Length: 397
Image 1: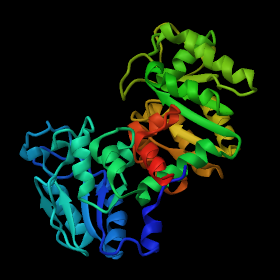
Image 2: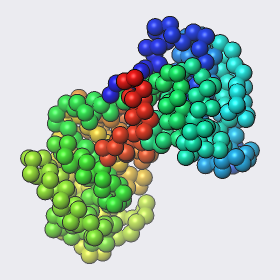
Image 3: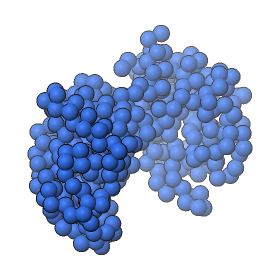
Image 4: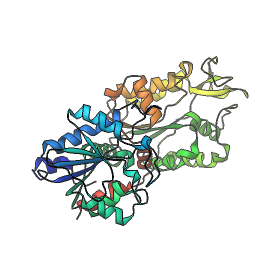
């Protein structure tokens, strides 16, 4: 995908004395007192901001935070805690500016944080009147917020239509590169792991990937539905029997082109869903009527690990078992370790996946960890994200 890259503009000296508007993703979790509990997104936004400052730009940064009501400011919707943390990370004062749509005062070498953009009337529905006002604030618009790239809003799409220059920041550019490498030009075999509680929430992803991948590993409740489709009993495990036809269609589509959906040959079961439930390894053919399948078994895990180690590209979305419970984490742990040990290019995304990566300490061994949950899933569905679309259109002139 061809987009203008902010790093290239900076390297070419085209940013000095320009008014640069950066749409970042600073939507961080906070406790009841408003203290930031996890600042990964703020830290991830710093390179783009620093790049703009080093290039001599007058820098404006904005983001959404939470789900405010447009036009109704409440203290809990304020980016004030973010401004404080950003000041610490940048080592300079970052002023917070409210009511900024009609004009912002910022000089080259300065940076200001513009209050929660979703407070602006017309932001969510991308009203043209707002988009044109936003574009008038800047010479260069930089989208560095992959987490919102699947939404066509004022600060993600509208401003990019009207700004004199619209480009991708380093975070967004890295996502584009990783997604292209994994899905558009993958090294084969291409293996996808799609896991979660329900087939219904991932059905479009499964169908989209069934046309592309060499192996489609399913896990969690999704795997239970596929086991049912393969004629196996799953006891009282979570599944969606009404989607057996859809699961069979995915299996058949894969088989028709010599690809595979590996069905578990052994599973870890319990009688109750709890951390202290007794775990029993069983053949997939021996699941009792009162069993709950909570993980893949060791033989299945070993077989999948072998496939992952031989892969050229791995796309990972979702743990394959209830990895939060020690007795049912071994499948996900084995998958994580196999990805870490594989020479394949790997891209991982989704909240539970990131939690598993952190739990098993393999951050450095994963090729690319995607920062956007919903946006990552929409890419896997084969959708063109609005933010990517408008940046590509602007790059094409």
